[in-house]
Image (cartoon, rainbow, N blue to C red; front, side, top):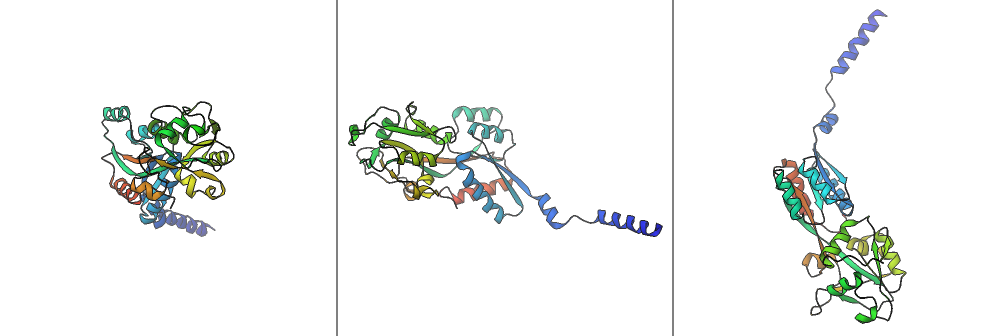
Length: 283
């Protein structure tokens, strides 16, 4: 028995001295890139990141979600996050605050998303100018007859705080700083937006281009997608990925990527990969 115990002890000591398996070593030696994005960009960012990891097995990309761009900015400035994705350009105040901490962030334009204006299918109006969109959503136009439609009240539908980036973009860029009308019907998400608009005569709302054309519910929701013209003097344009890429569809929302200029090489490679994929429908 004594000989057996000596043998067992020796075996245990030898096993503890064996080298760690190559797979465990590989996992330990992986370079981690931390990316922060908000909800509207999360799925696309996650898909691209997984593609990148498939091509770069030595890198682990961790994608975190935050509702506010300013929170992501603070994280990349204090170096707890490597890359942030944003659906708006940084404000002068945000850039100045970063500069005071000695950080001059690199800004990279990934591409454009589109915002689509929808109404119910019984509405005879087929297109709008940007100015008409503004006046309808802010409550300046309250009856469709004022722009060639039927004599019926305009009913604005909007999403709540689940997708703040889209609402902020519309208010800043399309409504020129004016708020969406106060008595708008508020729905929780874009799927509910489309179903509400489809069932509400005289309604108008806005969704992301992916919701209108690429989501699982797009083909099941009977809404009318309105053509948009930048002014009354130009041809109305239907939203599409092609028209976004060419720049002819006027309600286009830029997507940016920010990182520190002294980021590690793997971060630079990841950034180049994202830029190469661009921004569009889900892969």
